[in-house]
Length: 187
Image: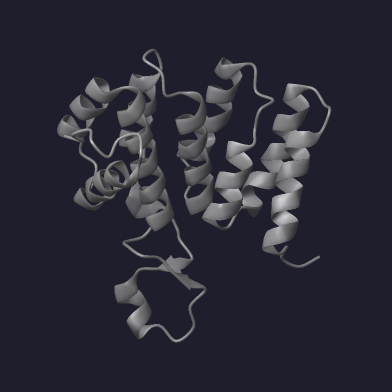
């Protein structure tokens, strides 16, 4: 059948969200869809349009294998879904524990860093930073969003975590760029 284009993937994901089907059936459809995600726009658009989740316990369990995936956009999916559904006082610690458990070094990315792209002959795409850039950026986005919702917990986590320095820089940048947190100290 070949690879689907951006628009086809977007429609596929949005149709899952629009279906009138039981929640567990939608998880089955989502399981087939998530591996097809290959860019941040499809991932984030679909995640931000998921309004059908009622059982957050089932969602958390559903996301666990994606946190452990070696595929960049499967991990991003887990991080973005956590940002949308689990940034509350009760869930913050389990979310940050999962962020700490992500092994960035084993996640495969088709997007080269700018340094790597200089020497490559053919490139699918170049990210703005170190691989896996789109997971790193998702973690930064989650933390900047958490700063708006849970500033004290977020600062305590960021000051004690072992996230790479580039992720912390991305987080600070996202916090500065956001209307909700531009005047909030990120550290």
